[in-house]
Length: 426
Image (cartoon, rainbow, N blue to C red; front, side, top):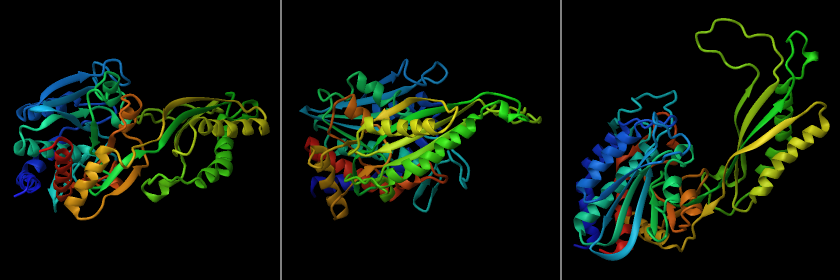
């Protein structure tokens, strides 16, 4: 029996444990925002990984966005040193999940197992991937306890809100430095036979139009900021959206629609504030003197971030030139440059070989439409040898009745264990 045959059998024998682990993780509702139960899930992982021979660290991201005594940003990093020198392979998963939303037909935090699928918020994105990586590593250690190098597993905060209280905080403190880590695998749900090399870029900005408040019965005495914002959106529809739709990338972005540049108007707020739900009165008659939108611009590796910003400002300036009384402010909220690991990078090659061995066909190479924590490992950690690979269907992320397939997790665990053996030796 070959080493990989033994690994396959070991993982298969752990299927029930893999299911139970995934269910346990889903049943800890780590909702972000605001960021709850982070310490609880880190404590759970600490107990699990300590039993597997890992030395663990609990790290709170003091001062990071969102961190407070009420909602502390906790992370766990676990490390197991091998019997002799060698590379370090790090599996990083985020522990937070997005809001539940409406439309569920099952308990969002029940972890229900039905027809080979485990349901719950975070099942796909990405507690199934976290569980699969843990079982893969534990199975590898059981077969090869005297492996070379080191294995790390981390559970990190706030990926869904930018990752600043998680991977970014750790990267700033050297946890993803090439001096410490050689290979990083992030088990995001990009598909069990696909290797995600990176992601598009993102530029978020808030635009505010200004007006003058007046009585709603005499709007001619004021200046309606919402009408000004309507002119901005109209100009974007006429000029910017068509221009972006015409741009295509050579990056293998999935799904197909994301191979172009995109712009989303994330939110719009104008006029007097929303009242509490129990308020039964009417609004006051006022001309709104302010209106704000948040835009979410996703851009391609072929585009320059300076141009991305400049073309939005150009639309605003064109509206100003043609609209009396128009005034605006704009400020940046967030920026991330595109990143893409080379196909011949060691971690890519190892996972590609493992995919072929498990599935009998070559891996598909893709790029994510949205960013994930690879951005911080690349930009802050300066570690290029990083990919996303994990079980789950990307289209299910953030949706009602989110699930992860048990067979997908088992097979992904096999791929991760095979890649680990390739990278460390066994």
